[in-house]
Length: 270
Image 1 (cartoon, rainbow, N blue to C red):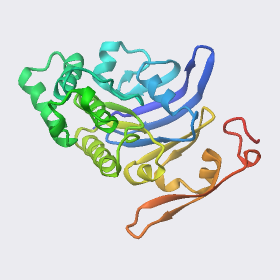
Image 2 (image 1 turned 180 degrees about the vertical axis):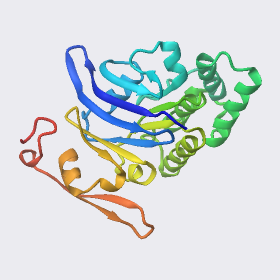
Image 3 (image 1 turned 90 degrees about the vertical axis):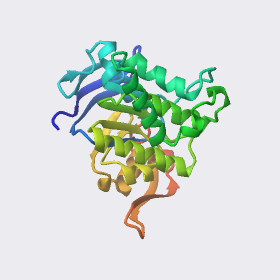
C-alpha cells in the first residue's frame, strides 16, 4: 500500500501563542503506530489537534495525496478519527447507539447492514459487548474512554489521532486497547498517532517515536533509539532503557534533575 503521512515545517498554536514550531516528520508509512512522547506542555495534544483541524496550523501535512490542513471538514471526518483527552460526556444514549451515531455522522453512505457489521466488529475487538446497552451516564471513566475509542475506530479512518488513549484504563485494558489499535493498523493499513505518557507501552507497541520538547521535534526514530541521553533531554530525568527477560525494552527513571541541569526544552537551562 502506498501513501503515508508527512509533516513539513508544521507550526500550530492558539491565537498568538505558538506551541509547535517547524515540525518535520515522515514519511510515516501505512500500518504504523507512532508514539508522541514528551513532558507536559511539549505540544503532543496540539499536534494531534492540528492534524484533526481543531487548532490553527501552517506548513505542510500530507496524508496520502491529501492536504490535511486544507481539506474540508466532511473529507477530514472520513479520513481521520480523533480521540481527545476528555472522556465522552454522560448521555442518555446507550453505548451501542453512541458508536452507531458516530459512524453515521461520518459515513451516512454506508448501507445499514454494513454499518451494523462495523459497529459489532469494533465492540467485539474492544471487549465492549457487556456495555452495549448501558447508558453512558452509567459507565466508569475507563469504560467511556473505550467507547470514545470505538467511536474513532468504527469509521476505519486512514489516520487515527489518539490523545492518551489508555490514561483511564487499568493494566488489562491498556494492553487490550493497544493490541486492538495494532491489529487495526496491520489489517487496514491505517496510521495511528498516539500521545502517550507511558513510555514503556510506547516502546512495546509502537514502530516509531516522535519526541517533542519545547514545541520542537527532539527526535524521530524507532523506539530502540530511545536512550538515557534522550530521557534526560526530553523529561529532565536521569534514566535508563534496558531489556527485560522477555526481550521488551523498558525505560527506568532514577531521579528527577534539578531545574538548572535540565537542557533547554522548556526554557530551562541552556
